[in-house]
Image 1 (tube, rainbow, N blue to C red):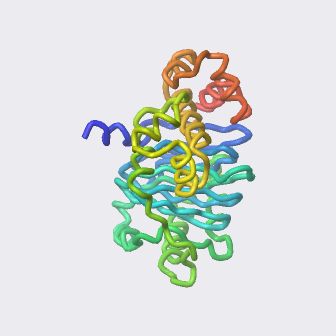
Image 2 (image 1 turned 90 degrees about the horizontal axis):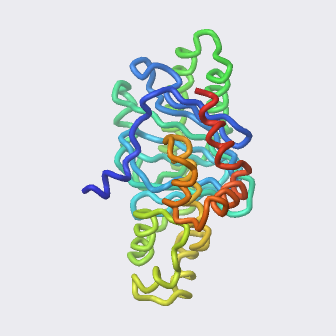
Image 3 (image 1 turned 120 degrees about the vertical axis):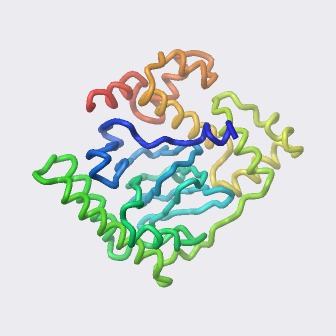
Length: 297
């Protein structure tokens, strides 16, 4: 139970803005009593990924460039440009960008308890969690909402809440229209790969030994490498790198830990090695990334 609780992402407690060349994210754009939106953002990181987690709210993602993979519980979904993906409350999930392609992802976290006509409709969406964005309407609504919030326009709260409800209804129409369902069916993961992924997420660190991981599930290293890439879509080493990047960004953004402590917890050999790794895959040093998240508070 403690392990499951540790995966939970709590809802934001205070207003936060992250804005740089690769990311815009705003948490609690409005007072939580007046708005249904917990966070809203767009991400351009080519190496984007999230750690495994769950939360008490809904989350909607839209891929505008490249492609992405999401694991929800024990099922893998592949999302292409122009497609939506929905996660529901309490579902354990994570996502990562496809390899070596420009990537752009819009996303929003929201609650529905006070929208009584829409709340049950979102639970009607079943195992098929991917749908096409007909005529790019969802994308246009995401962009309009972000523009309103960035510009701090007059009466932006009622405008954004109105756009948000249009987003919800448009999303439901896309998901519940059989003609807009994604062609590719979801893929269940086998138990061995699920166990390896659970190990990697239980303790995120840089220095995993693939040989030891393979021994822990009683297969050869080459077999693990082949099965992992077939199941997840990227090599094991690249997947570990995604986890480390996401964990590092989260620690830099939401804690006051020293960079040397973060490097040590991720089991890099030195802070220098960690800083080179971080800049190579984000384009920023850890210090600059932290400053970019604090300067917008």
